[in-house]
Image 1 (cartoon, each protein chain N blue to C red):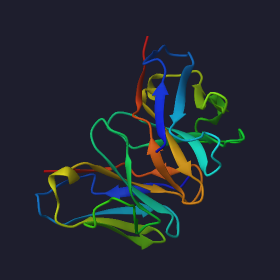
Image 2 (cartoon, helix red, strand yellow; image 1 turned 30 degrees about the vertical axis):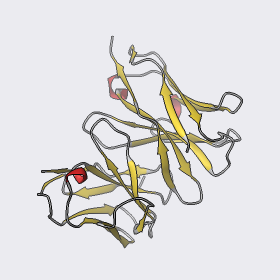
Image 3 (cartoon, rainbow over the protein chains, first blue to last red; image 1 turned 90 degrees about the vertical axis):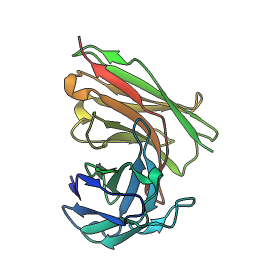
Length: 106
Length: 120
């Protein structure tokens, strides 16, 4: 199985800040990497696919980058609604695997 | 807009079988762009991919669960199902059904989640 490791596990920030979350795969996955946002008690929501492709309707302050084993999700100018948990997921092969999540807190 | 809804018991006794159903609406379960998928998330932990079924009934399972797992599809009812046998407390989690877009390789729609607790 491909292990996905996110850092940090939690992050404190303020409205207007810029934050970056990283995700590392245990082997090369090219750009087969998705990012999801999950609010408490809710299902995940797809933000970015193929490492850097922003989904329709997702604000432009979200961006993704990386390839191979190292990836990042950046949120510029944090808004209140951005405080949530973010998870990466590899789509390279099965079993599909996720990072443990990064909790973004005020 | 595809919508998914999980249904099933919230409490299962140890050693018994956990059974959940996902009903697909707003779109056809026979749409071949999708694999219909089950995932779970223990409290405070990351998501775990359980397994999936194609519109023709072909399945792929997580090797860690494969010996206890059956995922099936009933296209006439617009439903797919999960059966996990010999459950223990470690199977306690929120269970989600989701649609996996085969070509694009991502989950685009999710159910709201169904908390299943394994306890006597």
